[in-house]
Length: 297
Image (cartoon, rainbow, N blue to C red; front, side, top):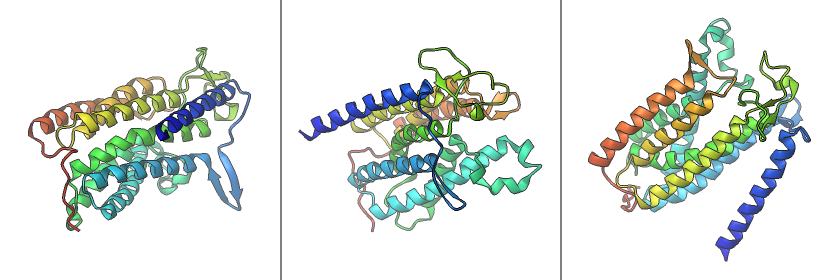
């Protein structure tokens, strides 16, 4: 009965989102990026949506981790480390990609509220942070590959939610288009040189839908096919990067390394590394999701 109720709720939500997007894409409603203002403080949809995604992923990931025998306290600590190092990584990646600008105004590097984050840098930063945590935390009840398997399982779900923050910011859209699902962008949010165009590819939606599919597949693989720790991480790198490579080609706000889009270069590297990692951990790795790691607390 509970499953039926959840299924009905999901269907209702998707129907509601369909009509909401249809109205928004047709310029029948406008989403203000700022929910409300308290003095100099702005509460924005972007931050609320990102925080919501993190909380959802934590609650689900925590349950999976505890089933593997990972200490609840260690999960919370690793999350905090991963979020902080992820924010640092996301900012450093962005600043590096726009160094021609930031080198002239170094004071802007620390002003993250002016915008400028990159998901690839966030993922890499989080991985480095959690890796260091597993090495320095005394009696840590999980290894890096085991812990980041769960994190990588939750990442596409978090990204699927987070992309709606881009939607509310009227950013991360693609080239002009006349396709039936074209998205209206208000004039003040249009990229320079595209002021005369009204409708664009909703690339935020492409990536969000793909990430939902990736999450569903990874969850199935985690429950039924995973043999060793590290396989989910490897598959996430491959699957997410495949879509990101092609979707990035539609984006108008891409970061560039020389003449090439940074996200496409990073995607190729992650696909390559993910394939190598999957082969290695599948053949030489240890542990699987059915084996519980005894708590060392």
